[in-house]
Image (cartoon, rainbow, N blue to C red; front, top):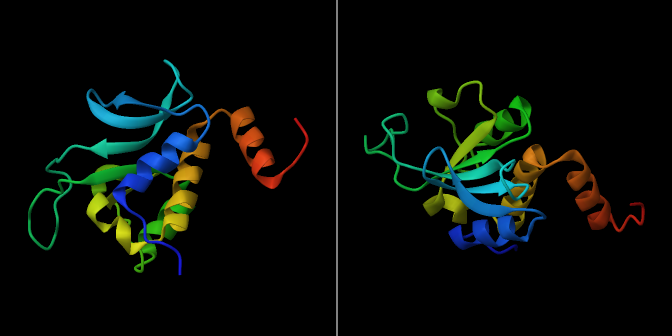
Length: 144
């Protein structure tokens, strides 16, 4: 059985992807962005507690949310509708291709699943040529 994901895996996976930098967006929110520099676009963001994201079971604000970009509405629906994994959305994210997950619940998926989701998030925001080169290298493709 594959190893369960941990919050530390988010940093390890994101940091291993090409041209990623850890910076801030939405004012002061820690964010993984691609490519490095001023044109970087966020693909994983540590979301601050906000009244728009409340645990329905407790009524408390979520304290440990990640926002993960997804490629499209179909990918978002696939993650949110799969009750075996901890991804969800809120009305605040209607029309936005992103999902939420509590860092404390990452252990409900395995590391390989998390890696796949984070690579897709990175690919949704990275420059096209960078994405092509990354996937060519993973396949062992010698084309440049």
